[in-house]
Amino acid sequence: MNMNFFVNTRLITGVDCVKNNAERLGSYGDRCLIVTGASSAKKCGALDDVTKALDSTGVKYEIYDKICQNPTVESCFEAGKIASDLKADFILGIGGGSPLDASKAIAVVAANPDITEKNLYAMNWSEQPLPVVAVGTTAGTGSEVTSVAVITNSKGLKKSFRNDLSYPVLSLGDPKYTLSLSDSFTRSTAVDALAHCVESFFNRSANDISKIYAVAGIRKLLKVFEKIMSGSTDVLTIEDREELYNASILGGLAIAITGTAFPHALGYFLTENYGIAHGTACAVFINEFIDYNADVKPELTKEFFDEIRVDEIGFKTAVEKITPPIDVKLSDSDIEKLSVRWENNAALKRNWGNVDTAFINSLLRKLF
Ligand SMILES: [Fe+2]
Image 1 (tube, rainbow, N blue to C red):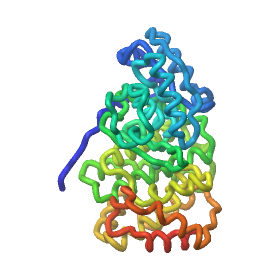
Image 2 (cartoon, rainbow, N blue to C red):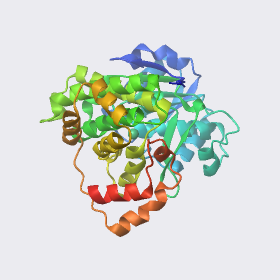
Image 3 (tube, rainbow, N blue to C red):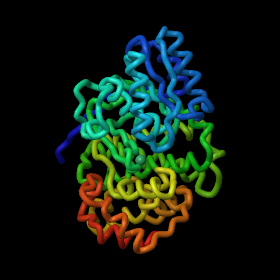
Image 4 (spheres, protein in one colour):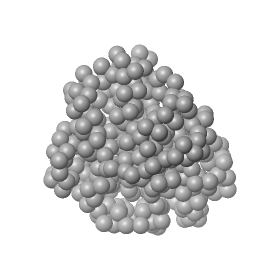
């Protein structure tokens, strides 16, 4: 099996890793723009840790805290211009996937303040993006170790770019920040990590390295899932939270190599049209994804269950019990209207077999 592997990120995790690595932050320049959402970075203590670390190294900063869930390209342009005016040397994103993905786009706009939306997504960048430092506060996205940014475009559609220049130069992950996450957010982010691992494993671009990450991530997740199958995530200890965080990083490393597959490709419309949390929107397709691959790649499916050391029933039960329930009903005409989204979709092409519109329509009819 041919291999192809590149991750350009120094990753440091552990309790108090921001405080313990303050000096590293100073090595990226004198000024930075902190990019985050309205409240979670404050609530979990990450913003406080970051500002103290920057103060201790003499780095000047401004805070842009208007990144919402499923960040808009407009907010990336607004923050990018602020960073450019500030003459920021680097962007420091704090959060889950939304602020971290936004930081990658903001880093491009900051270095190219006159860039158009089209050229941002097309990666026609005259200047290299500013370095991005990522401080993770959820256990799901894996954006800390990927070069992918998923940003909602001006038409309201989630659209991504993926560029080797967009790997965070440094990612700091302190599992204590995830202690304040709600039960439903803990679940939706954990199943996002699971979807990353599973979609990476059953992926045309998978190789020996990506499969090792994917399997290791799934094993960690399933172990923690056992504890919360029939109860709340309140029982999770800091060690469990660390396992979830590390699993999310393994999932990120896996999709950094392979990209995702049809659960992510299909999940976006549930988030855009029905406000379903990203991880949940993807995870509702995981068990169907397993069935699909059992049909088109039976040997690979056998390898999958051998590797994860849980049988098919146990795995599917865990997915059902951990994924927050959703209530979405689609009519035939709703499904028909979605068809345009499946044309030339890169993630759909990464599946084994042929995931065509007829297959997707029958799947959506079955599930919704
Ligand atoms: Fe995801």
